[in-house]
Length: 394
Image (tube, rainbow, N blue to C red; front, top):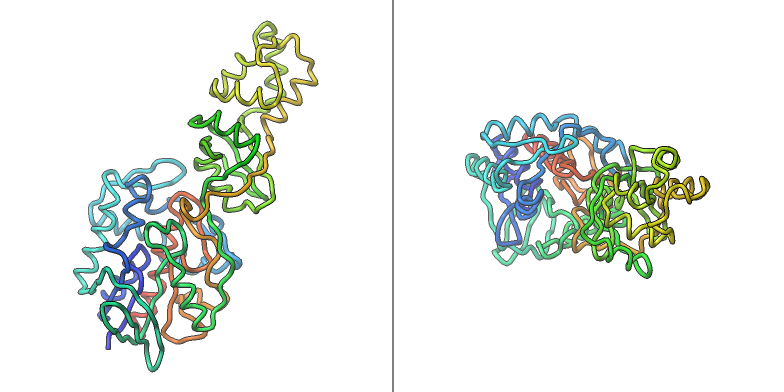
């Protein structure tokens, strides 16, 4: 009988494994794919945005916004940074508190692997689990055989990026043991458009700018990238987690200016200049031409020839361009899965099921989703340590 079986060899699973094993427990990790830490390896453009300096509960979405507070406060970003520094992994802050490896995300996987090896964690890859049963502990049936343990941790992640092996296994196990699973959808994902807006996006494909994108009550000021299908870049990805089908998003293309006042001032000081020339001082020229054509405004018009009313309305549009996405790119390119296992049936201190003793859920499979920028990795580390701490004394 093993003390703990962890299903899922990703960020949360590996973190939980080595912390639990360090307390003297026997731990077995079962991973379905050919290697551990696949999403770690691909994250951050291959450099792994492993946490955020400004991690706090307000940066997470959940039906119960208070649930994440306990785990995040007991294992913080500073604790994980200390682990990274212990292993002498060089890192840097990119923007907005986002910490990346200087060299490669392989450094984070190697660190977790080393910690597991030091504490005799057994890891099996290519292990497809078929069934889990409970009878004085847990019995796991797989293509590699049958395994039994006193405790079971589900760290299988969500539905994002199915080509990396994502499945609904964690949700199925939760339902099997009587847990409610809240509706899931793709988060931190590009927005797509149809019709005239799709044609506009195609004409702007490859253009990027600093913008503010608002969805619901949330506003994000970061980079915005036009693609052949729609909107991507950090600002759009952040907004996608708050966007609901049928709703519009608002784009402020000049978030640091009152565009109306700026254009009216330019009319007084530069009356003979063309509208497109003035706008190109603040926006990419390719964006200026395409947007003015879309808004049916003559880009060759001189400011002096444009009525103040026209400039005011154009400025208002530049600061609050309302467009309605048709959809998102879905789980295929989503960085995270929103929704998941209802936190009302889990202990916020230990991540243990309140319906089945010895059963734990950690990481993305739970209804806690972070903003872009290292927050989801921090949730993986924090929720894993919360479970591991409880398992260490069980």
